[in-house]
Image (cartoon, rainbow, N blue to C red):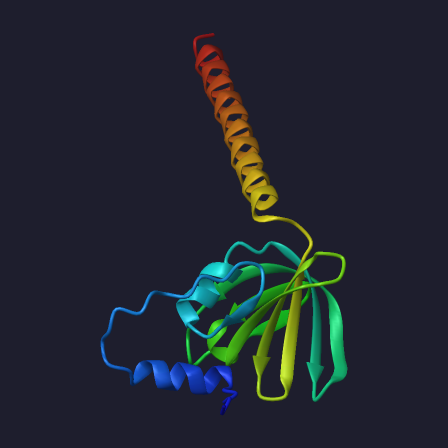
Length: 163
């Protein structure tokens, strides 16, 4: 028997040239390789705070924590990690490998040639949604207080004009 090993790039190129047959879309559960930029973007969009490890040719270049501020797909823009913020462009990477650490932590390995940006979530998507929801409620409450205080001040001003 002959077995072939293909890189994720080769798989993506081959899949683009296959006839339009009814091949089911992949189902990836906890581990696997993702080459489709839309799938990568959807998966990464739920990330909030992450620990990142950036390596080139297996050598550690940088590591730290950052908040994922934006996930986008634009072949003319960069992925940027600065000031504890991460602006993540899926076009900066050839593929995303989804892994589980021995401690059952999810790891997102974003790879381009000999470089890898590993992202380890520090929160779950559910925690992020709850935090966003809490922030919206808090902002609405503050706005209500500000508007109420402003209305009170306007009423007080109107009452002062009568005397």
